[in-house]
Image 1 (cartoon, rainbow, N blue to C red):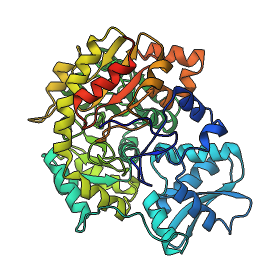
Image 2 (image 1 turned 135 degrees about the horizontal axis):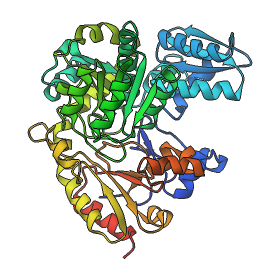
Image 3 (image 1 turned 180 degrees about the vertical axis):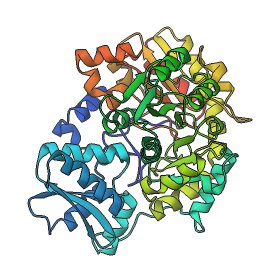
Length: 499
């Protein structure tokens, strides 16, 4: 059964390691984005790359003694601590240092709101925060918590178990081609850095973003690419415009990143044509398959590197953050990518890996239920007079290209975005579905996506103009269908939509 309202700030699911959190009203969403103390103090958790987990914060306080008057961040490895310190010292020389306390690594920097923002954004973009489970285990080891949260864990070789299941979705890849990461963004960051290192030796330092991507993917390309080397090709279906760009920048472009399909407009272009075009111009192609899952889409044969957030669909309970990079062994650069990726990938903490391994075997069954329900929900929304636009994997203009990539038995995934004709707040506040960030869970989730991902754009005239130029309505809602019966999801939507 679908829930009544979940209180503001409550974790979704009810776990201390949940990846989503309840934002039950549009006022709560705005308050969270504007850092209204009345809203923020009720937030028990948040999406792990955006919200400082209470376990991580408690452990940071416990190790901060040697750094009086400095701000401390805990990170995933010694290498990440060094990268973060280098990033901040590039902004203000001598302001930051990496440190270790037992097996815990961190960054300490001079107290400064600006430096704190830059440190948080860097760790958010590259997936470098300490795992909540690692923090919890360390708090227990230090006697600061009585015990770790009980949960089902895989008892054997968890990494082998995860790779075994991933190879059913990535049949071209051998075990040596599949790399695990602590988040999807760390997987993308590692792909970006591995390709960037290799291509720089050939004089290629520029990058292309194809389509409107997830916000941290956009930030990664904008912030880490050398000045003048970032290019945004907005239309995923206009390969002619892309070819003109590649010709104009011949010999300079290192790589291209795109999502298949894109988030949140769920567009799929001619991926085979894109692959051929990139290969012809010496451009490494990174395909992010998170929106529908590698278990639905066979994207690796077209890519140099395929990436995905395993938080979505594979960790379907919604209590693990993880990611993967897969190397296409048939691409000329495969050996080079295999050699360079480990330098930039962060370790996936053992208990996170064991929790992921305990869930990943259910992925085909979870996706079968989601794939069966999503078309029914999309059809309902498409036919409702209160809905202005609906976007999903099988929308006109994308459906044929999407279907060409499907594994046998694959489907559309759960993501459906839509725009209302009426008042956003009235609908959102009435709706009796779980409301929060993330997707790809057994639980149906909905959020005003652009409010959460791009509030800086939603809340300014210039930002709204940028969104409009990319075909994005500020009021777009992103729904991800879970495993509940389709008729229950439809009934909840129908009750909230204007009659």
